[in-house]
Length: 114
Length: 116
Image 1 (cartoon, each protein chain N blue to C red):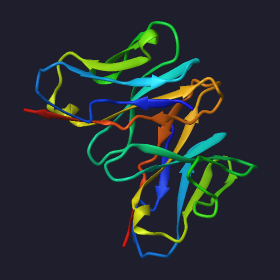
Image 2 (cartoon, rainbow over the protein chains, first blue to last red):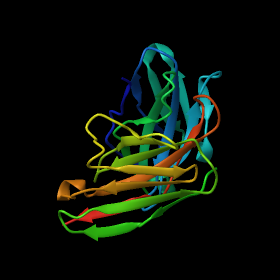
Image 3 (cartoon, one colour):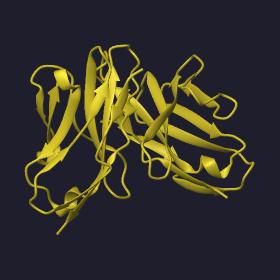
Image 4 (cartoon, rainbow over the protein chains, first blue to last red):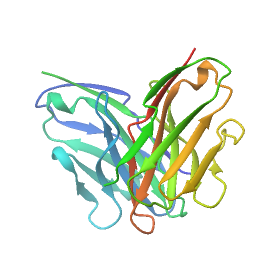
């Protein structure tokens, strides 16, 4: 079965700093990759997704992620974070097994200090 | 996008009781999923609810503890039976849109249960 690892559990940055959150998955076949964000007190929202094609995908709010198949990674990046980016970020994957449910990583709590 | 409504949004329950969570979607969907998010943790899939067939449960979750109904293509319920404090969690309903395996998953706002 597939699994997702997020190695950064809690990240603290100052505003305008650059962000990179790590995500690695384990599955040998075709994958679809997602990053979700959960702002305090709100429900999960999709930031971006990768299905195929250009491995560099751009999402909402200036976020982007790069799929590196050889490294089984899908790291999330943002060149300059804002205080409003404070949230929990979850990496998730579905696979070509036909099972449509997402497998989530453990999440990374991002705290941006003004 | 999909509009997903869950009831109740939160509840405080006594040990040994059962609670049913409802999930209503604004349009017909084939597959609905129930997740659990325990305090400070990620989301764990409980089961997949398909209309017209029994739910498919993930390892560690059983029908006796988490019975699920799926009477039509827009509605599902999850019951948390014989609750204990360990069941205190946010329970989320989600649906997928799109064809093949590329559908995006949408989430409701969740039902936050506290078991005393």
